[in-house]
Image 1 (tube, rainbow, N blue to C red):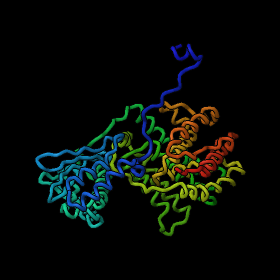
Image 2 (image 1 turned 30 degrees about the vertical axis):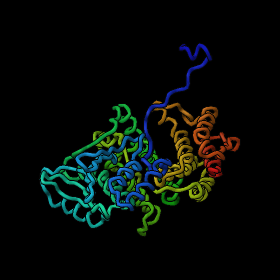
Image 3 (image 1 turned 180 degrees about the vertical axis):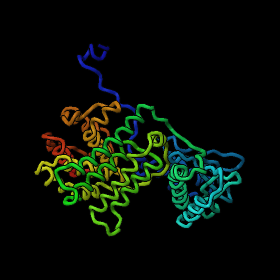
Image 4 (image 1 turned 90 degrees about the horizontal axis):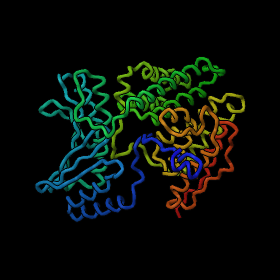
Length: 438
């Protein structure tokens, strides 16, 4: 036994692996960043353009992400920042602001992908796709400095960066004439971690298919029950495996297809969603593995919401689990609170305490998966570890107590009878949190 154990008669607390979950959000910038943006606006009005841009990049800089650097060179401001696997680079001087990202190299110029990019240009507000003399596909934004206010730059660079990050993997996957160029990865995942995530993706898809085909509820009579299962699956796969490229786009398409007004009923939509999941189930291992890597980001793609709107989401969806729970359909009952958590994390930039509480519930609901990644299991094989869960809740409250002094989690309201009932009681407590800062 080590020194810690000899003194206290117990093992030290486990150290969690450094694995990131979910997509980057930029909605909770600190006070120094907000002050930098305000100062940039003032300098821009005074026509101190380069000073304004330095402050603007201070606003975008996220120290934890290591996402950006800017420097002066020959009287110009040079910069580069990262959005996913793409590096966006450019310069600014007293006349012009210019930024570009290189997406892919064309070994052969084909009308198919060139037409695709030309059509995409009509949808872009600030930037445009272009070809370099070396036949590299780029996306470019430029403006006269006098027209390049910090507000405009934020919108334009966000468009350029997010479009560039999404298109590189998708274009190369679809068109053989293209190959990735200027590919940037923050951390290559170990082979074991990739294998765990791929196995989870496949086993969870197949498990949901098996439930639809062999569950106690007929899929044609209870289609909404299986819509919950499919959407919960979509959001869990995105948050827990964090894929890029084709797989990420497929999951985003599943979300869009579910809520679009296309005249299909729930049963028909479920069939469409299942076909999308089937493509992931059949996707070769080597292609799935190539889409699993860790990147830095500068812009979030989800809109921020406050706690009041999160309360609305919980109020709308959580009561729907009661009938399934009361009638012995535990798989569907558990999928509904899991869906609430997944949709919140997938679709919105949540307040920091809400995000941490949602992550914790995800870790409880998917305890065996987290265990396979090296985390402490909070509900191994569905057996809730009450002591460990309560300790984790207290840790989250303590983490945010300075900024949210009224934050208190009423653990007495938690129901540890089984996992679905626990999840429902947990979300009810989260719904009633006091998120006041004063």
